[in-house]
Image (cartoon, rainbow, N blue to C red; front, side):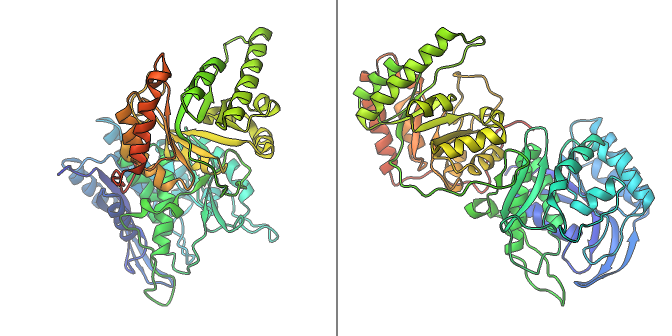
Length: 526
């Protein structure tokens, strides 16, 4: 049996069993990560109040680190309630010591006060956080009040706009300016946006609003601890912070759904294995600072089936004769496009629109959506970088055009971002290694493809490294709506397409479905 990755949680005990190390243990178990609970403070509390806090002597805290470092070196260290400036500084020194021997991530949950109001951090402790932990942090997970406190500001509230969300992006940028590599400001204690809880993510790979429906429960004790520990556990499994935050939001929502009453006040939340197989928990991620998302479309569309990607109108016409009924015209833009190239592109798109209309085929034009729309094409495919480059106004114009949108996705955060645009389909790739284009992504494999298909809530197509009829069949057996082929078409599609189409049909009709993994695998090296 493979050893699970090791994660240290340096936090406080909770005698009520709700927050602190109790919640951290449940979150680690939900991810299959081995948790080493390092006690930094002991609290006396029940479901209504914290009645006493005792900080662990730094020498005792240091002894716990020393013992663990000899035998259970962590991939990730997560901090919760630390208790005082001396403890914060000791943690910082140990992070440096651990990193001398190799990479160790640090997730900081700045537990500065209890939800019942008890203060956990004085001015010296806050200053130690700013100077010692933030510059070393891989991810920090404050709520709005904690973010303001870390920045040395009061959490003043406009009575007309309680817990205003609009300030969160700027707060996150300032916290990153203090050294935190990634920031997720949680919004569970802020106002809803159409019934959605919005967290602001600002990381190396993605920035935007993570949104999921608010869970209607009064029992939320330990939600913040669960979220931060879930981020840490996902990083321990190899996910980059943006993906880890997606999984953490799912785990926290799942924990809220499984909360229960324990005493007279708010009861504990409970994360458990299997949270990442519930499609309704997968959040959506915005493209920018505008939080609204497009409504999920329920239009009935014919299956995409065998999906051919080609680079010329002549090739499109050749494929239509073989019976292919979904094609993408992908003509790459040269470094210095001139008028002759633009004229050629326009002719090619116009010819493809007419040919596909006559054949009753679905056409998606790669990238050039405005030209495609003007010439009567109904579909466009965009990579996520191209979609980002459109800006808010461009994305709104594209949505208003009514064109069917296909979007690429290679990671959990890209899947969540694609879902927020209500696309016609989402491409999952590369399923197998591909030489078509250079990319940093690991192959998704059939298990991730199956997970994408189960979780996306919209049709999924497989793309990347599909070179044979057997691979087409294997991908189709995952239940996807279409399988994209490029090099598998060969020089003479008339000789290859029949076998590829048959493979897709066999895979689609097969009773066998690849196993659904409890959590998708990382597709980008942490």
